[in-house]
Image 1 (spheres, one colour):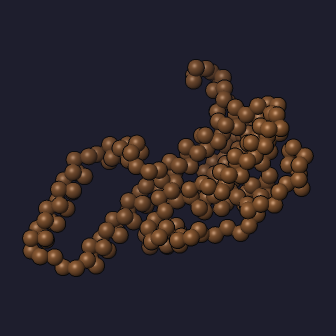
Image 2: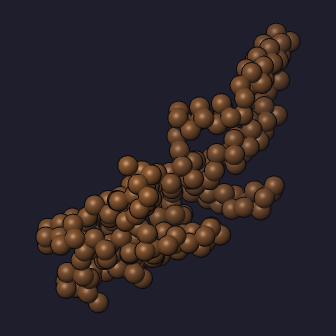
Amino acid sequence: ETDTTGKPEAKDASRAKHGPESGMSIYIDPVTGQKIPMKDGKPCRTCIDMKTWKRLGKVASAKDAAESPKTTEDGKKDATKSVAESNATAKSVSPADDTEWRRKNCPPDVEALGSSTWTLLHTMAAYYPERPAPSQMDSMKMFFEGFAQHYPCWFCKGDFQKSVAANPIQVGSRKKLSQWLCDRHNEVNEKLGKPKFDCTKVFERWLEGPPNGKCD
């Protein structure tokens, strides 16, 4: 098996079986039935969306409060006051403002991370040389291999590693790399029930902009 440089394709860790990392487990959400990746007993922030993260956080807080030792009367008053103040603050912020604040200040959820990541990868592919030097082909291949090992969402990277193992990275040209990446993105879109992107428009989307000049 060879890659686009004509060199034998190495059998690396991407061909190994993929499962939860150390400290990872799966929790079945009783509300949605969704499988929630857990890290050391807490939801994996980069593996789920913000709404699910917030809801599970509230469930965990309620559970901790129920299991905590009884406090003194003064302690109860302080706790009640704290909750009331928190609720008042929450009500004073509109849902739209809260969402915008979280988008700018909170660690990314799976959707924000995925969107930003695809933007970076597609743009890198679009600006990749049309006739890359051997060193450029090697470095781009190494980048994607490293990316597949270190992506923060463990089940996402496991799927990507399997896809790369079945469909070797195409670094022979800008067109080949962009097509290869678009195919990988569409695999994810299909799993998520999203429409596939027209891969003939990758350069229009991430390099040149639409013909009508609206992005100029």
